Image (cartoon, rainbow, N blue to C red; front, side):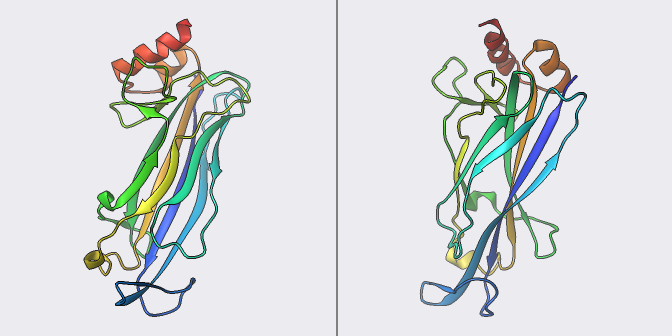
Length: 210
């Protein structure tokens, strides 16, 4: 049984105050100065049975000096660095925390994640990623060793209404990107990945048969 999980956290912060913190003030509605920052932090968690499986999260991302919440490139793909061909699935979930890093109930509807190369059509080979009923995005190909997937996430944006900005003062948005991989065999994915939808099993078994 071989399992590998890697997570990446994208942190977006909003600082709504009149005190200069990090970046140059930006003016909204000519009423208040808003300083925004957008940064990235990596966190990796590995659980190996042996050394045959190894993946990394590949990004095309540059931290903006003055992020105003508008659309910003944040491209995410997965690299297979291991010795075995692999199945890959990814979970991308936004969550809010307060100024102390504790969970905070924010509205995820204000978060705009732009996905690419995704379909919910289980019978197509034209899209690289298939969105499963379990919330995971499954890669619609077996990823050969040393190869990588095409992009899944393209960009991130925040659309917080003007009348809600005070509520989100000093709050932070974290977008959890978790990638999981197993050897491309039916025994491996059935043992390691719990709760795989039956529809996705059909897709994975079809890939193995080809």
